Image (cartoon, rainbow, N blue to C red; front, side, top):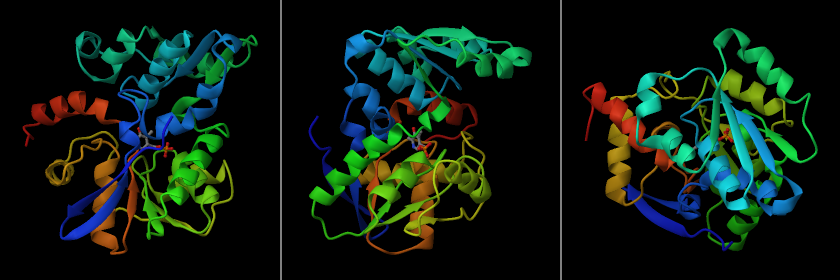
Length: 285
Ligand SMILES: *Cc1c(COP(=O)(O)O)cnc(C)c1O
């Protein structure tokens, strides 16, 4: 794999570098590619099955499905029951994952928690369990590789930004690049929740700066201002995801004016189903 390229865009009269991890692959891209890096380096014949679980719009699910397809591994994905609407949708991450031969199993709400807990008990040595969001120590190596690519670019920029769900990406990137400042913002839950998630993995280093959103946004809900930012970004020449990127860009534009390299975290394949939900709410470009 070659280093992902770096683009430059203009936004609100400022210029930003963008590390194009979105261009790594159609489905297996962004921070999910980085987080799965160790598994991607694993020889195909050392495993035969991957198990994971979580939401059915998830970018991680699609990335794992693409990895398993290329490795020839079986992929079993557990979720809570899904709607008829989603089952029949012919776009979005769920649809594409099924196309990549993901085997989807729905677990009743009442049983879900215990069922997921039981998964790790009966694993054989050719089956690997990936926890939700891929928030695992495993992810560290892939982010170290990303850090090396950033250093090797030799650009005169010392501040990076990437949005957070679990915070795994921002945290491991900050640990691998102590000479850079890493900005992030919580897109799932608030700052307190994000710090808890990160602290469970490692002490939060001083070069990691968490920007607090000026308004509370609920994850995966449509917001007019997110669509407006998306439009500006598209006009500037790059498509970003609609779940995480708008919150990060908003915080960068509103709260600071340093020169930044934005690490594209991927996830644009989720946009088609997300835009359909925007449209249902009467919001469109
Ligand atoms: C998963 C994801 C994130 C969040 O990554 P974490 O490591 O959990 O913080 C951010 N952006 C996109 C597009 C994602 O798919």
